[in-house]
Length: 366
Image (cartoon, rainbow, N blue to C red):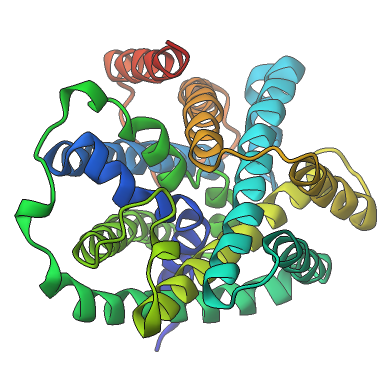
């Protein structure tokens, strides 16, 4: 396998591993409640929109000399207030996701072997935090291996469960909950923080582009396979895999656990890098700052799994992506290197996307 092929698959796995997390557990419930056809349309729409925004961000990264995470890019192109805003928005998203992963892992482990769910979540958190502390090399090895296992689980689940699916199990559209999938899908597809990490490890920037496109396509396909399989198996509660028993239940909950784990490691590592590179905080202190808030939120019993995912996706995701749109426009004028990717500026498209993100936040609280 040549270098470009290795880098391509690294990029795909990096994007898939960070994207496929706790949000996947809620998707069958959302598809049933909002309507299957409606949910498929919104999933495809959101996948395409976020793919375009990730390509925009890749162009920004390539227009900028040096190593930066999102907060560093925001500071360069939007000043200190832009940096602070991006830090707040991205931190809300990452900490909300880590909290959801801690909750989801406890529920998945409890479904695999019945015990105290809180103890499971705390033990899981300690293991993930230890992996996070030992840095980039461990992260790269673990996420690649676990991502392969995760995709293998999806294929096996699909072969076993998809034949059980019938169209009579779902409605096409449910007008009352038409907009329900937006926040959950935003959360489930949001991996904007992974683009700078991918750029660090992919030398060929055309390979970076292909990794982003195929990473998003594979993620959407994984979600559809998982949803159809879970609905076919009759797993229709808010955390789909926890309602299944037997060998299929074991397999489904192992998939959920692997998905949560790769996303936890990836997002936590990104947050740690923000503290280290953009705020020049030592490795140990950056690690403490990354792990302390999610576990405190968990210990004060901040639950409500779907609500956490919905709010995190709509608010944090929408605001982060608004800033990405503005940064992309600024970088075209202020970037300090010639990018290998160059996308035509389209102000109308960006305005329409901005309206979509703002409406998504407003509807969440109506």
